[in-house]
Image (cartoon, rainbow, N blue to C red; front, side, top):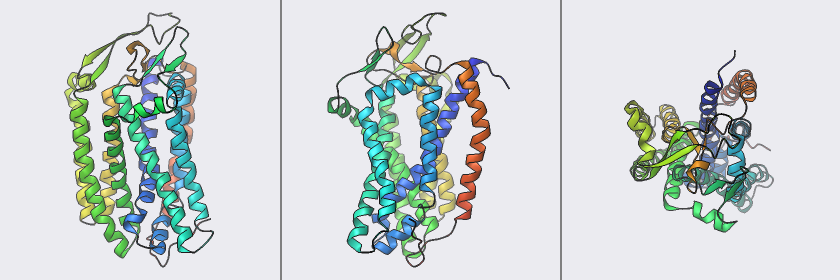
Length: 379
């Protein structure tokens, strides 16, 4: 099964998106559950019950993040290089937060006193909240363009170092997108808690799911209206064939309301953000009415369409530049060779179904409802 190079480039744009959606649905959900543990549980036994619903799955869910990172490295090496050059400190922050989570999962069960458990549960909450926020902030910055450029040797440069590079990323629009991410995932997490726990814990999760879902809709609409005022990028022409500096030799222009250009060119695409909004509303009301299973189905679709909304707005750009439009990276000039993409596709066809089958089996095998009296401790 051989594909043309351009076809493979589009296929890998889709596959990376699928991996990011898989990460949001699985790892995002268990991070949300960890973040909500003090909201829905009032003592250490109840917190243990909530945590026991994700302990068998959280490390398996990490595979989606690792796979997405590996896919970006292999399929879009220039994106990997450019992003790590300027987002190093933000990524370190996320990695430290993610590193804190397995410590909390393990060490919280080494003692039984309330003070010890509470400290590690706080660590688990902090280590889960930060990645949810930062990943949303990252999408917010992508939609605005990142302050990087390539020199004549295609070496990547950013403005500033450490805090002078990190703090500009925490701009108002990016923080708004971070809050959309947090509330969206908290809706999923609250629905999961409602589905997998009993009695008062599940009842406490109902208003949380409804409130987070409704806040997500409001913030998503505000972010969309705000994004409409931004300039966007229009790829006028790729570099001439045979050009050595194929990335910086292309022609890119800035256009008003550019993030909505694809929606204007193909109006049917407006169904993507509309469905993201509609499904989140349905998830919120399902959570309020105690229909957690349906709610998770709708919130999962909403998360997928929310990520797709950003992807459609940026296409064909993967990592646009706010400093030098010609340095912006697209799916056409940031990808690996034809052979690399083809071989990677073979690997995906073989191994992704295996990973999906195992994930489904693991959730089915370890299904059940947790309560303060029957939660299981995992070491």
